[in-house]
Amino acid sequence: MTISSLDKIQNVLASLHQQANKIDTLNSKNRSFSLRKDNAIFSEALFITNSDKLVEYVAEVQNKTNELNHLINLKKVQFSYARLELIEQQISAIISAINANDVQNKASKQHIQNLKKKKYRKAAQSFLQPIQSLYQKLAETHEFERRLLEMLEEKQIVLTQSTLKNKDKLSNELLVLHQRLGRCRQAISKIERQIEMSEKR
Image (cartoon, rainbow, N blue to C red; front, side, top):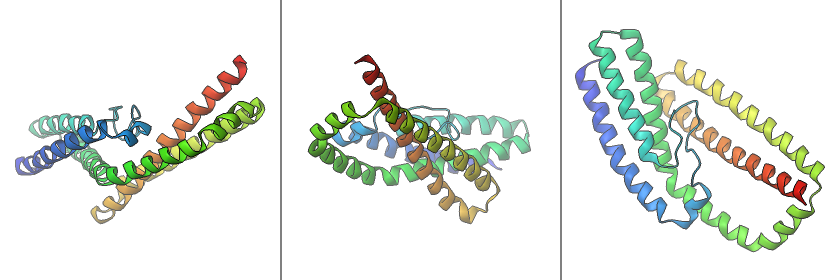
């Protein structure tokens, strides 16, 4: 691990910061982004940051890179390589998220259009749905969330043991799992709100 390696990471992060800032600005003006707004882009397993703004995740990696520089200066080799591995995973995940942003916005736009078409029918169904059925659905969704968390943990272990060649593919798979987990948690919140409304009636 050398200073030149750190310089390369800093250059990559500077580029990612510009791209992330641009995407965050465009997303804030995009109605289709509303479906993903206020939801973390990545899971807690990969980032401490909890935000719908990509630039905040880039800032976290920049902080970790500063910590890496400090570890190198202290000649903490083992800790340095562990920190570097995490930084590489985080950068790969951010790149995947940047590349997937347009596709996600198109999918969200289509979803909003479908929601408008089914708005009244779905509203009626949600109020008529028996509360017992809602509790069953909540239990099933929690079980799905548990399985996703297990899959994420397994993928993280595989990623730490994989070769550089496989890391991009595994990072993309991790991103997909993070996104599925986010949608699953949104579904849980929605069901819990439906139960609350049903119990108040």
